[in-house]
Length: 177
Image (cartoon, rainbow, N blue to C red):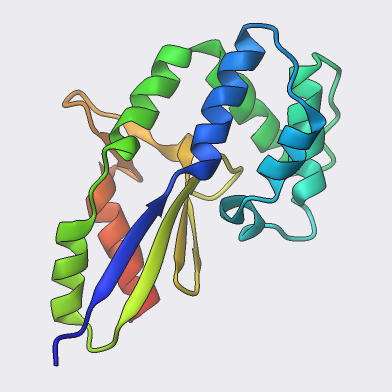
């Protein structure tokens, strides 16, 4: 019997953040309900810990949107704050980072992994604006830090100095192995 591995990409957090960065750049204020909903998206919830929580996300993004002084409570909040400011500096670069993941097709990788592993798996590859690490591995989930993507000259993106699909394949093998 043929085993099947399916890989779904989830860009909810990135789509929400693209709206946030664009609106903030245009001096529009983000609605608190929008920020609360954003902070509860699975891509973010999966990486929360004692230092970085839904309240961290809401507080930092609210401060940026309202142009209020922000004092991050720890290194993770500080990096999240700085990374968001970096996105606002050059929305063209932000678009260069986002476009390849919007077009990402992992069907070929799913077929390849289906031949390597003997069990059925449904995995979600999330892209999210995060803080320190390039990616987080959770059961049936890979959460990739959008801020760690690096556009290449061919119109794609790299992460950790390798093409995105190669990186995803390596990390998914960790989940499946």
